[in-house]
Amino acid sequence: MSRLDARSSADLSQEIDLVALVAEECARYAGATLTGTSPAIPGDVRLLHRLVRNLLDNAVKYGAPPVTADLSHTETEVILTISDAGQGIPEGLRDKVFQPFYRAPDKQNIKGYGLGLALVRQIAEAHGGSAIIVPAEEATSAIRVTLPI
Image (cartoon, rainbow, N blue to C red):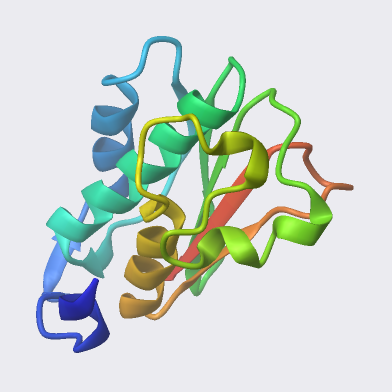
C-alpha cells in the first residue's frame, strides 16, 4: 500500500487485455462467471490482477453465490462490476469498507486483515479510475471499478 501511495510501483505502460485477465481470475473461483467485453487498457498487469482477485475474494467470502464479473465500456472508460447474491454492505458502512484494516462488526471472525477493498480503491486510483459500492437501487451486493481507456 505504501508503494502505491508513492505511485512508484505502478507501471501503466502495458496494454492489458482486461477480458482475459478477469476470465483468468474468475477461473480461480468455482461458479464465478464473466460477462461483457472491454477494449485493451493501459495499466499494470500485476496490480490489476490483485484488484480483480480482491474483489472476487470478497464476493466469495462475504457474499453469496452466484458471483458475477461484468465488463462494459464507454468511449472513455471500462467499467468492471463484481456482484454476488449476498445482502450487500449496509449504507452506513459503505465509506468505511475502503479504509485500511476496517472490518465490519459482524465480519470479525472471517479470515483476513481488512485490506482488500482499500487496495482495490488504491489500485483503481493509481490507474486514474475509481471504486465504489454500487447504489442499493441498482444492485444489492456489487462493487464497481472504472478505469480509463
